[in-house]
Length: 502
Ligand code: C2E
Ligand code: CA
Ligand code: CA
Image (cartoon, rainbow, N blue to C red; front, top):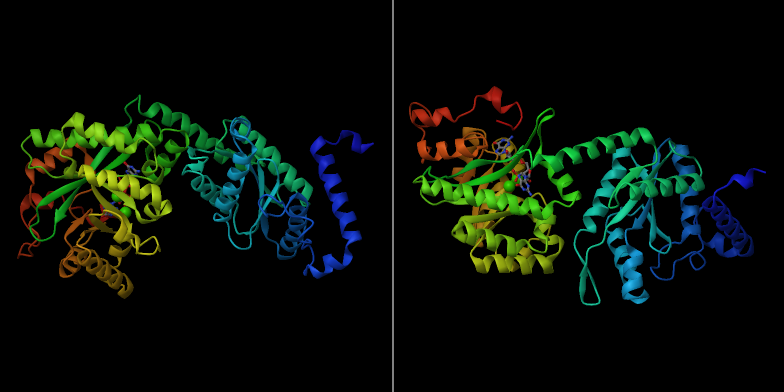
């Protein structure tokens, strides 16, 4: 018989489905009251710990969603989520703490999903997610990334902090099955594979979709070697005081140039570095190099100026961040006031309690804090009053069309006014055109940064730039904007249009 060849999980699925059918037959009235087809009776199918739908309810939701997707010719996705090392926590700290963790995980997962998505808990340390309305395969990975992001900050259990990882498997309708059992099973198989490949990972069930994931795995191996091979580097972009034209600081920006692949954008390799557990080493390396470079400039007679270092969300929430920064400052001898940390708005509001603690400690040391990409984050502005901040950075997005788009001009104007009324500095980034500079000057923005003055350049060129050019003549004259060597650092329009690497 065919059943003889079924896996244990398939048999379990069948039993669950049979149970559900029996329950439906026994309680027809209740099910009808549930509303539209495929909806499940609330009391019977809920996981008592989290209040989420259980396996049988989830099964029904998938069935309903598949029917709808088939009618609308859409794709949908099922995610199978499993906590890594849950057993260890449960065994060592007891079931009560284990249960607390599961509840907290359920809460965080809820925030990663849209209203139409379904989160369920089939049992133990597993969760299942139905994404009934995805436009592209990549949309499933967006949710997965959001989940990994949500798990980044530590869990407070029994007065202690725990970092939790998870493995996720993804199946897709119609690629990987057209009934709930196949979609759930295939997502489960993919989750198992993700676990085998090193936990805190995700896999698609379809091998062809995985080839993209494999590409990123290959990149991961390259990345592990990159530090050793000295392929990773910091470039520096000057920041200019808009009133005097003086260079008042530099932003340090990471670069990775792979011998075959060439330059890899920081937005691609930094998250990957963090995924493979290099967050702490990365922070230390960047802060160390930026401070070293700053001291080197001072030793070469350059007047002390600030160096800005970017911090990602994971870096900001890394446990030893303050200790690392403090140690590097002591070792290099850099005045803490000359170190500025750039943090994005969304990262700052993600975990207010721990962010506030970190920022206050850094502030006590004298380290400066700037909010990067300000205005892009749609968050409440009330946090501005609670954190020890020094500067807002107007994002390139607003600067781009500042002279042509009324909304962008209004937002930039509001940011400058807001910054000044809160006694914060304000700098605009991504300034490429003279017209943008003029507009920002009219707003009394304090400083500017962008390709108009210089692209980010390697450390030696940055020292050269600071030696040759302490000051940009920003006054419009008959010759245009200033002295001859200023023009050397101007880029022609063609270069501006061709990417960001020098
Ligand atoms: P960001 O902090 O917003 O950095 C500004 C980006 O805009 C940089 O891209 C810079 O090269 C680019 N840029 C500056 N002026 C102009 C301009 O006039 N025109 C144009 N088109 N672009 C301009 P980059 O270096 O590729 O960095 C991208 C992002 O990567 C950064 O955005 C930052 O979020 C992240 N990043 C870079 N270095 C680090 C780092 O050391 N640590 C962390 N955590 N993130 C970093
Ligand atoms: Ca930045
Ligand atoms: Ca930015």
